Amino acid sequence: MPREFGEIAFTPEVQAAQSQRGSRQTYECYIANGPANDSITPQIAEFVAHLDGFYLGTVSSNGYPYIQFRGGAPGFLKVLDEKTLGFADFSGNVQYITVGNLSGEAKAFLFLMDYRHRKRIKVWGRAEYVEGDCALIEWLRIPDYPAEVERAILFHVEAVSENCPQHIPIRYSVKEVEAMIAPLQAQIQELEQKLRESTSQTVSDRSNVQSRTP
View 1 (cartoon, rainbow, N blue to C red):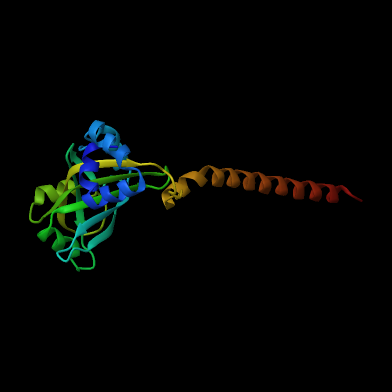
View 2 (cartoon, rainbow, N blue to C red; view 1 turned 90 degrees about the vertical axis):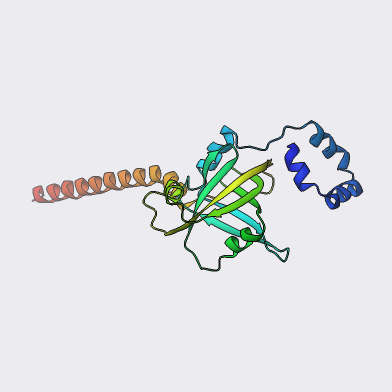
């Protein structure tokens, strides 16, 4: 159990709930002795590089959380350094809820999911949006991705927690499925070609037999 995660997530109310249900002592030991886990490791960076989507959570001024899915080509969420993630904010439905929330409260949350390998990583931190920085936006832009980039969003990492795979359903993207069935499709095409050749030869043999029959 990472120390920073516990210090952020285990509020007095959460600690009370743990005490009432018998798990508080265990988590106190984890927080006291666990690693900080407050940065992006090479292993997490590799995990991030393969993501084609994630969930971003922000907090509104009325206290309600707001969760939004962000998607793009694999690698669109970039590791800028061990404490910073960044991505291009594409043009959308022009509600600007995330932008508005970040204007008043920088606290934010990333929920990173890899359904195929049943792995998830939670990231706590503070986020900011950056407009007008052409160099940064160009750096975060996805090559050959047609969406218009309106701004950059930077996420400053404060805590990271990896969860167990329990209850995560296995799902595959279209590209993953296509890659999996490509060998089967090639084999089917090869068998169909052999079948056509065999059928053609059989028809030819019958014609030759019939032509020799008096």
